[in-house]
Image 1 (spheres, rainbow, N blue to C red):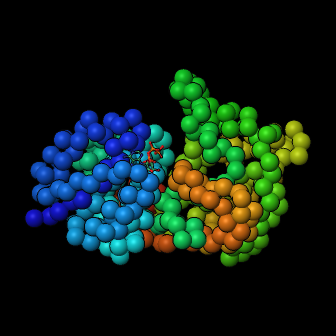
Image 2 (spheres, protein in one colour):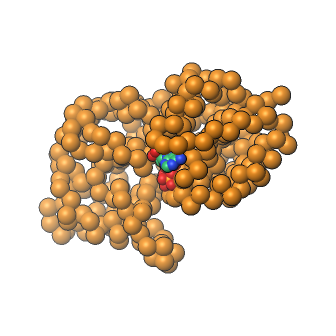
Image 3 (cartoon, rainbow, N blue to C red):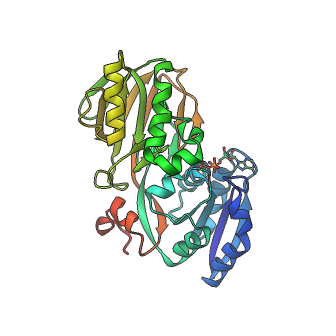
Length: 314
Ligand SMILES: Nc1ncnc2c1ncn2[C@@H]1O[C@H](COP(=O)(O)OP(=O)(O)OP(=O)(O)O)[C@@H](O)[C@H]1O
């Protein structure tokens, strides 16, 4: 009999997964999995459970937000197992699940895991930590949590931008030097993101055509500190229209590896969770590092994983 390890963060998001838990295990059971459940009790547990137990299973299912998924991915990678991972997004923002087109409906997401196919996906390293979809610093990090729901409903993407740019004048410029395979970028920035995703905190939305989550490359966006209202307007326009490449206040490029020199006190976020800064940061793209289950009719995943070239088949 096949075996599934379910790792659930019972406190993620609105705790809605807890209410569906019997249905989730029922679906796994009917799909032929003997199911073992492990709950996380605090930070790091997802990694510890996945690291010590993944090797004995045919499937690891993660239920929680992007932070829990990050932990489970790190644990699976550290275990050396190639076990496919199913992700049931049950957090508050679920940026990464949205990029991959995973269902927001918990039951449907579970069905997609058992009926779906494994496809490979790049995973980033930030010194000795892993991240699934974004390492970022500076402005906007709290924006996705502070936008009122009614504004999100009426204005959508624009609501995040309005909320985000409100903070820009109060942001202390951050000195940075970034080196990659082709060049060096340096100066004072208010924001930077190294993404393997089409969306980041609602503020940055990348065209699906630009993003391949399995190509060994990140999309990198750096936003310079504005010195006057004209430069601030340029940033606002570029964010609103998604035209990062054309904006003189931004550097936007694809890269596999980055070396960053920064203020060690400058905090980062990895997949939405706090990460202490460091003077020297090495960011690497671990190409096709994990296998993740996606539904067979998942059009978004087909786009961002270039399924035809992927090892999995839909
Ligand atoms: N049993 C628990 N009780 C309280 N906190 C927990 C528990 N298990 C894990 N955690 C914490 O939950 C955090 C991860 O939350 P997660 O990101 O999965 O959910 P979220 O923040 O609601 O979702 P999202 O990141 O998608 O907005 C981790 O930092 C971890 O320390």
